[in-house]
Length: 118
Image 1 (cartoon, rainbow, N blue to C red):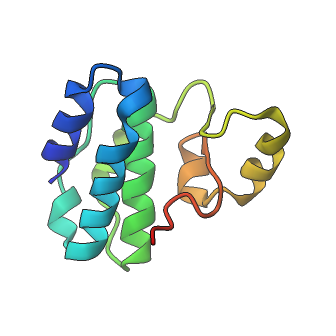
Image 2: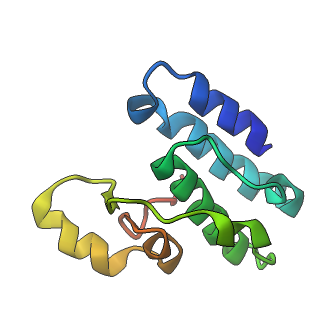
Image 3: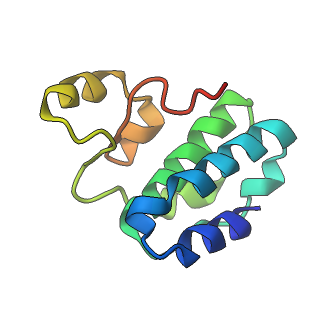
């Protein structure tokens, strides 16, 4: 599963701009299938930010589904420098507080409803 997401993210002309759709497809598929085997292999697209956010999201979703978090997550470095998904200075303090712990560990700061889907 993650191989497909990685391939989609990598083949985008501008990963910095076009990553959100394949990323959210991964979130939706994980929640729909509720299958830990989707994340048993390590993730790497050789991009510090996106390796970190995929890993943080894997931790978040495993916790949400009461799955054991895969061991490979310990080998993924945190994001350098810190990544605030909403790059508005006045919102950064709020995101620093309300980001789920799984994202904070990887130095990524999001709104508390970042992974909420309708």
